[in-house]
Image 1 (cartoon, rainbow, N blue to C red):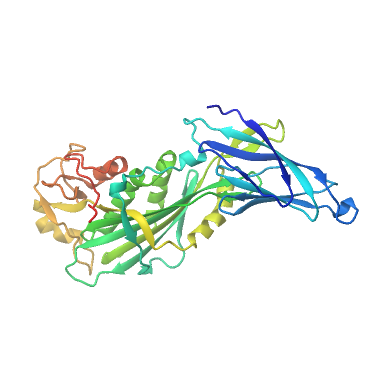
Image 2 (cartoon, rainbow, N blue to C red):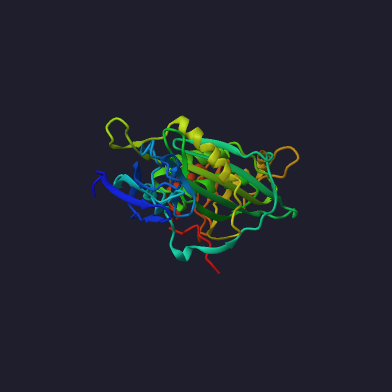
Length: 398
């Protein structure tokens, strides 16, 4: 496949919508509009005003431009279309508009906008039907926490339901995560692509909610992040999570994340007429933010095809029994460690002594496989299986 743009032409008559289909690796842009034929409604040319509308396949209006006998030609800075779109001419009388544009087929190594946003998805047997029931209260007030990383920006909101049982030592962390691609032209026109929505239910053990939340975030690159942006999205999660405090007694924690990905846009250069790429800039990130804030306000669906997973279990060394109070703040009970790891063992990942407060076991292994918590974070980014026995994190569907 070639990156060289191919020209295309369409003649549109008023009142006759035209669809423009695109392949999976194709992008299109409208470069020039020309009013080639028109009729007058009352015998004067001044009555002719012709509007051309470009719609995405969702029905969303992406752009409208106007032609007239006084201005029959227009050089456009239209948004880049990477899915099927439609064109329609509106006029009080008969009119024909000729559109000139470029069609670009992007090689796989460069990736189209759709390719870049394909998620790494587990097999169908690992997906389960899940229902989301709104409950709990948002922490930190109504305003979400915003951050950006590279060409990504997002916000995080956390809601929690406190545990009423003294002896409860397990909890659920629900991560509701959605992201959408955005294109921003040089003159500030923002176009939003299709939104991906995910629900992941993590089964956590113990009261160490902040640690469990970090492990949940580390597992997302492998599960739902589009590959080209995985590193930036992981940095974004860390920036957002650093602003969040979680109730230690929360039985259910719900994390709402909305992310915008500013993708590369195509435009026709006014100087030489060539099709070029524009990359993200701080100014365009700011232009994207109001559209992202609108996405935050959209309601979440109540039913998902999502994933259920276990999280690593916090651990303590056997000679930490006399140091239990080290894990306890004033007025709080100590952080629970469901199992005890013998002193003197080495972490199988870094081969250093298992010491310190940040230790964890992979969930469900026949024999507990214990690691440094930070070492497990690095493993979760790349894999969903235990480094020792290859046991997965997934909860078996019932």
